[in-house]
Image (cartoon, rainbow, N blue to C red; front, side):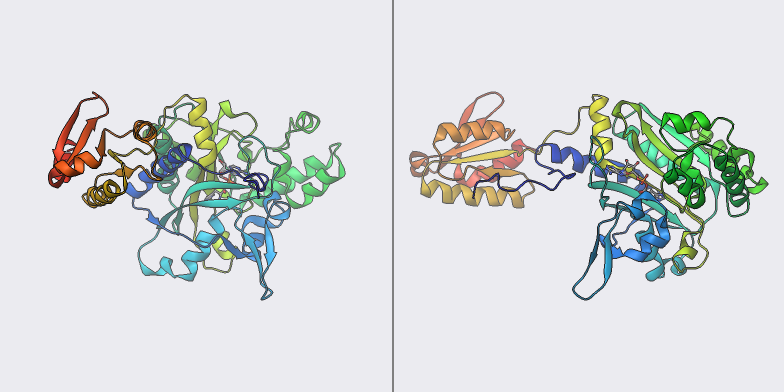
Length: 422
Ligand code: HAM
């Protein structure tokens, strides 16, 4: 079978060295501010009962109605690969009773792959990676502001600066229904296709998000949610804005920001990187005060976000940020002959156990090829041992920066290298 018989499924890609190192570094950097803010790591399974997403994310959303990878197990269970993790995380918190064990909010973060059967394009994949955070069980504008600030700090720590924060409030169960009715009335008077008309009944706010020119042109004069917010929602939103300003986080009020998931209430936000074309949202989130009850739990007002790792990497490239260097070793061992291989295998093992990174030339290649490999490995030192050296009980230690070569007694090799690389 030729090595090209199989390719990665449509909409997916392989993470391979050296770029894979960048991705690991980005995941770590996005999570670091969360750990400093008291968020604990959580890892739910990648598949769940399909009804969790239908109820949680919403039957009327594209994510649930069109994009889920569903499967029926041999035992007859209907499962779905997670299209997002907020519903899963909340389910896990409820199931493990975390919300009853200590003080609220329960603050957790996660890092994992998500699955959406979308039309693939640059920045839009069928398997993608998110680092996310959820703060469960507290209604406090400082929590919303904390999360937005942590995300902004995470991007900046990576060297990403040209992103924008869009901010909106979607109201709560008091004021949103009033707005919804007013919007539906307005939309029903427009000239729209059948699909969009159906959407007016199920999810009218999404119509505002329609990218088509013909639709947008008719939307001027549409009632805006901001004008319908109740006093509580208005006051809450004002506090989020004030706290963000105090934290030095710049944001743009975007009264049209409607997110593609049904569970949001009040604060919603998106992180946008303009250099990415159509898929410009590098992250997003918001408050979801009713989700717990929607999936059978007690009232637990919550807020969270998810940052797209794939798009963050693209944004960093677009901004010209030089990311972490590929993995390299400190020492590269070049054995010439079988006996030398045994000796160096032992030395490399000892070095690794001492906490140094070391690699060995495998496959019995010639010294020229092996030295090339040593250079490519990024090692500071090459250790070469041939038959002659074995007789003398030494290894040739070559400084790959200066080119200097010195013999070192084999039994002092590990300590010498440790000393030099300190
Ligand atoms: P979301 O806006 O659907 O929110 O996704 C968050 C981020 O994941 C997006 O901003 C984007 O960067 C990335 N993303 C989404 N779809 C794709 C895709 N097909 N390919 C590549 N990247 C993608 C959520 O998932 C919510 N669970 C966020 C949240 C957490 N809200 C509250 N808590």
